[in-house]
Image 1: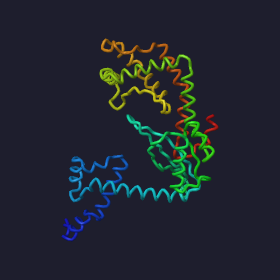
Image 2: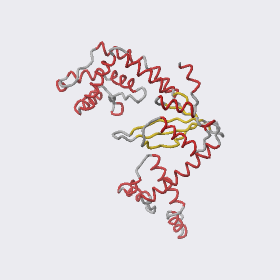
Image 3: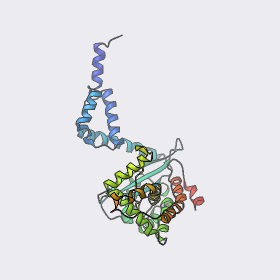
Image 4: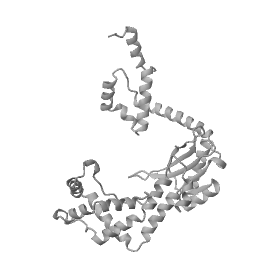
Amino acid sequence: SSQNTLLECANKRTSFEHGGSKYTAITKALVYMVCRDNMPTRTVEREGFLYYTKTLCPLYKVPSRSRLTVLIKDKYKMCRAQLKRTLDETNYVSLTSDIYTVIHSTRSFLVITGHFTNSKTSILQSACLKVIHLTERHTGNNIVEEFYKICEEFCLNRTNKGRTHRPGRESCTIILRFQMGLMSHFAHITNLVVRTSLKNTVGLDQLILQIKNVIAYFKHSTIASDALRTEQIKHGKSEGDILYLTQDISTRWNSTLEMLNKFENLTLILTTILASKNHSNGPPMLLGLYIEVISEIIQLPAPFKEATAQISAEKYVTASMVLPFM
């Protein structure tokens, strides 16, 4: 077998030094990993990561945390410039937005996404244009101002590249409709119809409240949650197939349907657990009659969930589906 010459060994070592081909390739991969997996920049300072990297590639020197931050900013600028060039070649851009609140925090962020057709491949694409920390009130004036900033930042002409498509309050809706051209969010309205219908059905709110009480008990009791897991394993479920109860969230689409579905699937096991002496302080389980009612209720919003899934596609245009669904 042939052995490497001294020159080849020296070149190999040089390629792992700053500016070398191997160093550049590995560092680019590191930046991608941190960004793609949403990892903290302090990852490069952690003992386990440094040990892993040293074992994998002893010649590679991991960049410092401050250096990694600079590299990420450079990567952002490059991607942003590339996106801007793509949008410059696009005739129409549809803007969608949503406001997210960080869990266990009062911080809110406005996320604006652009949807467009690639001029070369005619494939529908989307890209997050900006995530904005909202420090002021979520009024229509403040939100529409952010839309204008995005249009200016990416050179989007509002007459043909600024159609917005978003859920929002009436004040914001009016401003966007007259100033930028608004399309109501069909999927959002569909889910509002379901939620309002469930809320206005006489007696249903009390039934759902009973279900929530049972779910809350299993969420807050370690003994109850362990029993739920154990009983499912006894019934032949593997660890990966175990079901967990979930509460509905008012701002999450179809969450009430998901809550009822999981509750119905676990009805027999929940009844067994709550009937045992270990859970005498737990909430009362629903009567069989009400469980049958749940089965009937689940069937009603199911078509709306299917409509939401189809209308929310990102790889093809869905506007033509609105009228058939209605």
